Image 1 (cartoon, rainbow, N blue to C red):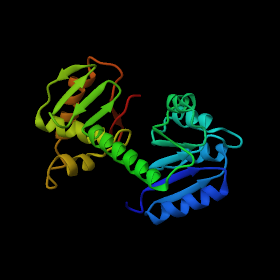
Image 2: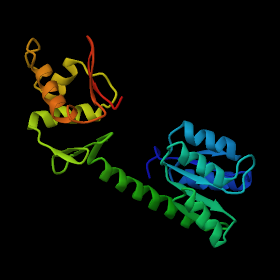
Image 3: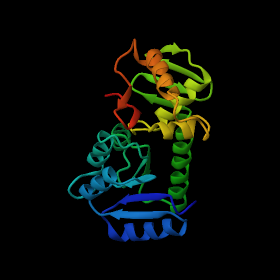
Length: 230
């Protein structure tokens, strides 16, 4: 496991936290500990982690509340609940609040590591699949079969229009200058004095914006273009 894999470990028992953290670090993980639910929720919703290990019996906020807060904040990081509460109702409750897996204390450390690896593999596979689809509002671009749909209606694009739209989608919300577009969609020696960028932006607007809401392609006067559901 690469050392760039970062885990948040929310556990109030410092003895368990220290021992587990030490073991995980020996397996190449970077581990950040938190000793109460409030700090755990703040860290999970402020910083980026590859996986969160979450106890349930925590001070200030219990694990269920932390899990719920994380998901309500829009954070999709996989959560492994690690707790002494082994009743089926507790497991179901944890999963209902958004946990991805559940391990009951006392646990075998090898099983913890195996479950972490399994969750990370599942997450990576999901990300790889999701990366084949680019979306903004009701616009969807499938990079595998080279199709574009708006409000579930198939949009016919030329190869160059498709490349331009893909570049805009991959940089959602970012203002792209004519030079940005030229360098990534056209050749580097492209004649910057022509209005071909404006022409192709207009083509895209007619095809994906004119008959749909919300409008997605916008102009930042004097700076360039950006795609975003405003």
